[in-house]
Length: 163
Figure 1 (cartoon, rainbow, N blue to C red):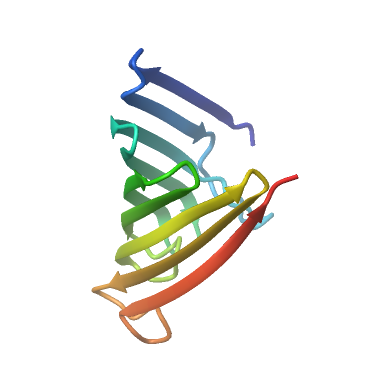
Figure 2 (figure 1 turned 180 degrees about the vertical axis):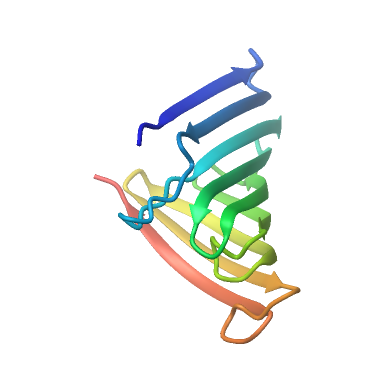
């Protein structure tokens, strides 16, 4: 089915604030014959630079889809807060606090509110490499989606190579 995408952005001339609204909109109807998702999603991103070294970002989205087997209409909401500290041109740190409400359990398999806290660093020793270690804790107060547990702690490291 046809879909439309849009983005509208406003930014202060001094670059200290910006607001962006984006969306993917169409029928929003699950295609049961093809087993194909057609969700509608609207996303709002606000960025505020307190200084050249401290930035806050809020990312909020709302999604919905109709005609889902055993569900009907599914809805979900996500809110993510980022606080980024830039120590040097090569080293920054980001703390992220997320809330994701899967009202019907359609997106994750477990209905309810997920809360996540993540802390990570970006180290870019040169233009071609970014090293990103991170620790994260996920929690669900109403269900046990993490191998029959309410919470899950993870630590990871990734490497981005640009060419």
